[in-house]
Length: 240
Image (cartoon, rainbow, N blue to C red; front, top):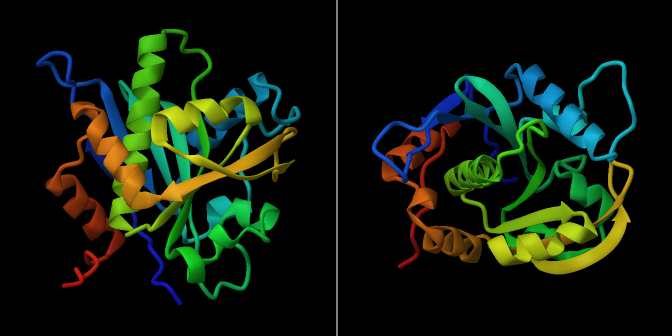
């Protein structure tokens, strides 16, 4: 069985302002499964409900059983201490009695989602930015910050393969931004009203694409060390 990853409390990382010399007002917080994430669930609800992807709920929060698994990590983006974006990372766990990634329940027949075939897998899911933010530059920066936070978590967790279930209209975006390739679909996806396609790629290629983008996406050794300490993980031994 693969080693699970868990940490408490949340890990907070600043986001560098690459435009000027002033500190960025954006910070990233990475949460484990026991952390209080109610503000993230409320943000998810607003974003998904406004996009007509979920039905109206009196709870005004959007979460599911995968949020409570020890293999799940959540990245929150905070602008001046207000939660304005989030990304969930669901790690696959070999030998688990139940699926630990939502896509496993939908695309169970896909060989790329088998750890025996692909290695350690992580699903990028529930990526949202506050729909009230209409400034395109800020929205792009927040999406970039969330993807960067996800990369820090994936590096700390030694992921081998990244998967993502996306709406058909978003496939071109993820192919252009991250190099994700179509795998299967469209199929119904848990909790949302529209079908999704499965995309994926090897994590090392995805990470290389991230590092080639620009300085904003740079991940420092200090950030990785902090994340690994929080995860209680050691870097994977290099093969000679």
